[in-house]
Length: 256
View 1 (cartoon, rainbow, N blue to C red):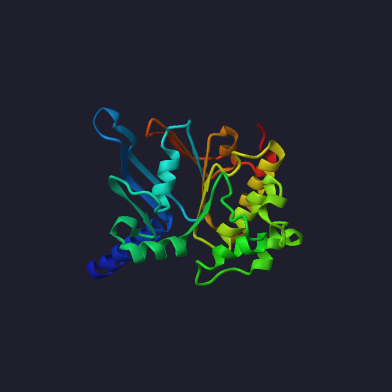
View 2 (view 1 turned 60 degrees about the vertical axis):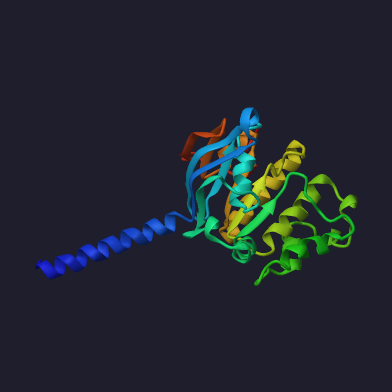
């Protein structure tokens, strides 16, 4: 192999390596730090968090109350700002965005599922789900989503006419109708009983398989880590564990 041929091969090898690297770094969380309060009341909530999450992964973020997991989720979601460090999706750093770009980032990339549903009480179920569609340039079909969630026959009911599980399904429908790249779930089963929790987790799993969304689930329920591709444990604002789950099981098989 002459020198010219060798150089071309070297550049191609580097390019292939970089392509693989960029694919693997769908979500990059770099040296994130956050505090609340000042002086004697100052609390360091996040102390230099570094995480990389691949496209299509289910990532479970574990930790006790006060560990910083919900704060981290809010920073990823652009709801809160970090003191230092950066979040990047596909190489786009949130901190470099102006208000208009940040709004577009939330619309294009993010879906959010909350513990307490946050449904609009005077809108019916279909209308609540459709509020997510208004934030998207290319929303999915509302009736298709409702049927997939088992809510189609309840579409004209108000939130207070549904069970907790049905309300959480509505919340998930509102989040996924815009087909987000990244679905952020903050204690999505925290207010639900065991059987309903498993149904919601099976639903989240099926969404991941069907649409390929990257999903981050914040939870204090240790058993949920077993359905994850990646498991991260936070304590006192620091990462204590961060590993690929080689023994992943289905949501149906979870027990606690």
